Each structure stands twice: as structure tokens, then as C-alpha cells.
Image (cartoon, rainbow, N blue to C red; front, side, top):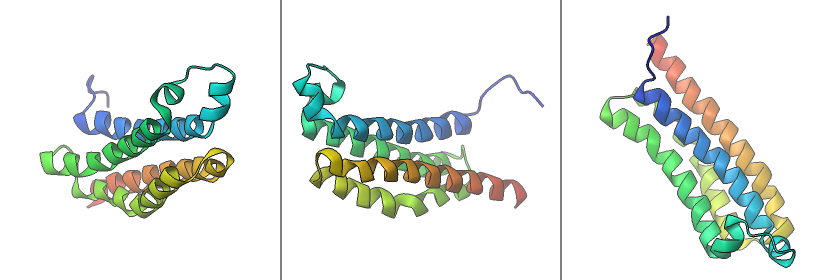
Length: 134
């Protein structure tokens, strides 16, 4: 059935997932700051510097994790969307990696941010499916 509108739940769920996808791009750019700077690339990461780019990564992931409770508390989504929080320990570990590693060592964080995004999406989706059947 088409309702010709998109719910707040759908919009915010997409924003949360999009923010984690942005985090993949951010860690990639963080990894490449020095090489990009040497060849004159003016990426956002080069402009922000390592500290600003680290903050961007943490901010994008943090906002993604604030969206499920926001959905639930506003009544736009079921409490089950908070299942996405089960992936937060991986995010927290990635925060520490982002703040301490440089260069090629961030390749692991790049791959794990992709895994984090997948885990978050699966858990958020599972919460929505469970809510439909309860």
C-alpha cells in the first residue's frame, strides 16, 4: 500500500544509517590526511586536521546512536529500535582506535566501521520486524 508520505521513523532511520556510512568515509579520509596534504588535496579532513576529523567521526556515530532512543521517546518508533544499541561496544572501541591510531593502522578501523554499520542496520531492522509481530 502506498501512503504518499514518508514517516518520521523512516526518515530518521535513514539518517542514522547514513551517518554511519559517512563515518566510513571520514575514517578513510582521516587515514589519508598526510598523503592528501603532501599532494595538495584539500579534502575536508585536510582542512579540519586530524583532531577535527576525529571529532567528526565521533559526532556522526554518536548522533546515529541517539536516533533510536529519540524515535522511541517521541513515539515515532517502537522501543525495539533500541536494539541498535547492542552494536555500541564496537563503536566505543572504534572511538578509541580513531583517537589513537594514524595512517595505515586505520585500515582496520575502516573495515570495522563497515562492520559496525552492518551490525547497526541488522539490529535496527530486527527491532522494527519484532515490533511488527508483537
